[in-house]
Image (cartoon, rainbow, N blue to C red):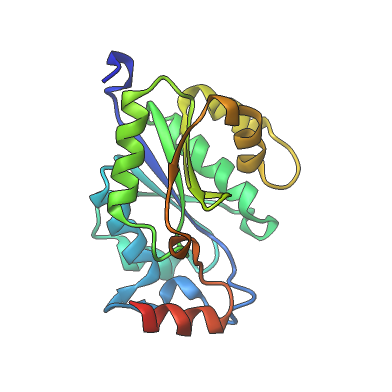
Length: 201
């Protein structure tokens, strides 16, 4: 393990969206006896992310009640209606103040991301000198993504759509890549997604 990578790896769990295509707040839907947001937060913590910052926005009070007993912190994104970039930046700002060595960014609506995947990404980060550890789903790069603290300012300064993706593209040649099954890429976007995921869990 690199000596300068022994410090905490924070988690940024993005959970602020409006669920506009779902019609209801998908983070409050139930999977395996618990809400989607609680399930994601528990897996983040079990994977070794600490501190865990949950970025809230839409129906933040309801979302926080689902996880308030877990050892995590919250960051309110008042600009959540502007999209995921604003939530990512709110999360990065929060973890910058917590002196994290790196941050792993997760989406709360990807129910097949496991604690084992998260732990493997943290381990790869600690074993390497790469500024990025990225997830690859048969050629598709998607969250979770782990960013070294040296990239935090770059994430904050990026403009336009897909700030995180822009930083990944810029540094991909230096990145560590972990392959995951395509099935883990599924997210909850429309009602049919929820029915399909519920049947698979």
